[in-house]
Image (cartoon, rainbow over all chains, first blue to last red; front, side):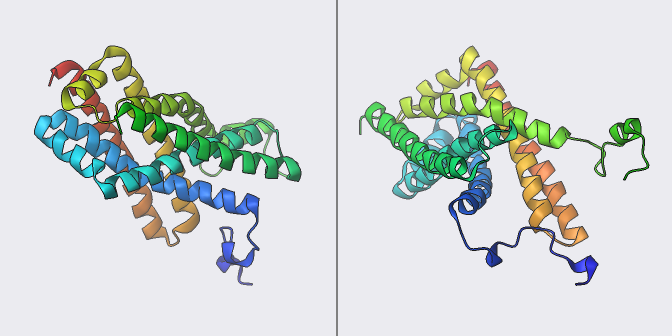
Length: 130
Length: 127
């Protein structure tokens, strides 16, 4: 193979998907998706500076059916990235590299991210009065 | 085997000339973001359906404003570092990569500054 033309990044298509690799690429995808979400965070904060009218518009958009759906997506992506990020920090510290442990922490992370998302929305629904 | 002395290897800091700085700052911001984001999401859940006056009073509260500024700084720093790696991995071609990296740096700094300004304006401006 021409050495100048070697693949530089992991070639996802040639690997059989497995828990660890799927969770890993989802970590990146949720990260990028959360990056898009920071635009909404910025819009929300700027609307709050602009005054009650602008904030009302922002609230209508974010509080709409579609807005809440996107917000739900971002909230899950956030908890996914947060839980898996903690998993990464343990790896960085040198723990959890055994295949069994990595698989178990992977499933635990998925479970925790779902629980936290449900918890956050449950709290929001109770606080917001439904 | 490297012909460099250990000192030169340390001083050289690798091809990017920044050593483990990127890696370390990504972890440092990640650790900071864990409590900050849990606090932020829990607060937003509690504030669900709050009106303008309540939201701005919350943002303008000294403790909240300081935590929000820390959150904004860590968040956009972390985003900048993360997107940089994604771009370096998947955007090929020198020029396209350069444009994306510059856009990433400027974009995250712009958004982060705008968010930080918004928090300060609400805290100090009494709007």
